[in-house]
Amino acid sequence: MSDSWPLALLDWYAAHARVLPWRNPPGAALPADPDWPYRVWLSEVMLQQTTVEAATPYFQAFTARWPSVAALAAADDGELMQAWAGLGYYARARNLLACARAVVAQHDGRFPGEEEALRALPGIGDYTAAAVAAFGFGRDAVVIDGNVERVVTRLLALAEPLPGARAAIRAALADVLPAGQAGDFAQALMDLARRVCTPKAPRCLVCPIADACAGRRTGAPEDFPVKPAKKARPTRQGTAWWIEVDGAVLLMRRPARGLLGGMLALPSCDWRGRDATPPLAGDWQALGVVRHGFTHFELELAVQALRLPARPALDGEWVAVDAAATGLPTLFAKAVQLALALRGEAGKMAP
Image (cartoon, rainbow, N blue to C red):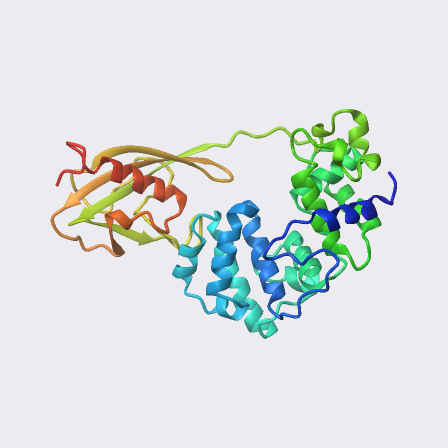
């Protein structure tokens, strides 16, 4: 493979780069704004579990509400969790706060520019550390995400499945990394993956680096990257309880650690079976089941409802039923929607 392909890629990027609120234009000097690395970091955390299109309004809302890492560090935990709803993986929201507070406490409110120091911060792994170093500080870091993996495995026609192929990907990029242009180089690979080197039906005829691509010469570039066989995800079961009194429903904040930690939700069991004891005795009505996929398992959550004449002595927050789904994680928003759909049906949720 020719070592000249990075230059051809950078030329293509200069003409075709996407304009994004957290991205520096190709070839431009980094902004003088001392909070620029904060914006880069925030965008990278958001983009780990959603698309550019979905993340953009969240990014704009967050930076308007918390324009600096110091402002984010001072945010109320519950308010930040609500603002994060819809971005997935609430452990990242908790790490977001922990990281912001560590930057304030350990680095006087300014992100460090070295990858090693960045990796020492909560929630920052190899990819995010390299991205902040390259995009936020202009360092010569090798930035590799899933899009970059797809382009490089095709360029090299790597037969080894991921994640085993990652060492070869990193070595290949380190060998050709354009000094002083690591940020543009990584962004160019990402844009190429989105617009040209797509997962299915890659557009090889318009690819600026097609001549260097071993995957294209095989005639089946879409066969790369090679992926290991998927393992079936187990199914777990649990129960959530809708407790309604005079047009309000009880929400409880989940424990800080664990899935959906720190989030408001309907009272729920530990998802280890449906034979769970309700939070209080009563004539519980079965409303149905909602399903939701997590990274390592599928969940079937039965929803049971009880309408009472007076509020029981339970900890939590009472919220108007019509607003109950607002700010909840997707799983519990589904459960609320099921309950709302059945509130008016005869025989359901009778007091």
